[in-house]
Length: 168
Image (cartoon, rainbow, N blue to C red; front, top):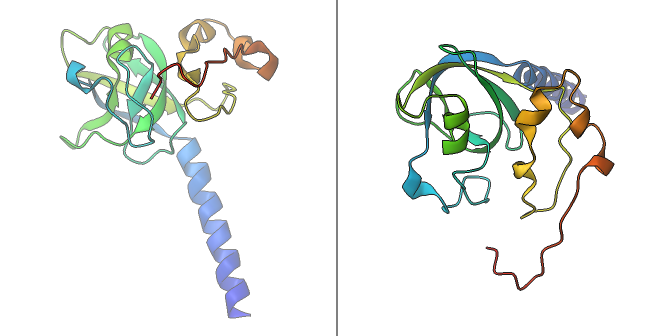
């Protein structure tokens, strides 16, 4: 009986924590990855590319889509969590790819105050390991009110790459 009560309380607590993570809204500072990190592996195993729309967050699960808004100019971008960090400074809440930082207009400053929120209204299809799905045009989907570009799996075009193409 004690095991049943323990398991039940564990499940209730974990579902509560999961729902809290999905409704995250944070305000803090964002920085971006240095150019020399391009090509290195991130914490989820993928390689970092400076032209991708990715980020590092300390606690959110890999694959989570975040809407990042620069508070000084109201520019927004959607990024995917692929790494852990930032580890320098308490006020930094996210490390962005170079492309995401440039879309937010923060490259010259290096650091910007941002607001992040989880995008739970964008459908992002599961993809096999190594599939470059993160290069989907998410910023174009943001300009549409109901994100129809990403609603159906049939809208996603998958290009098959030969096994001997030399990727990874």
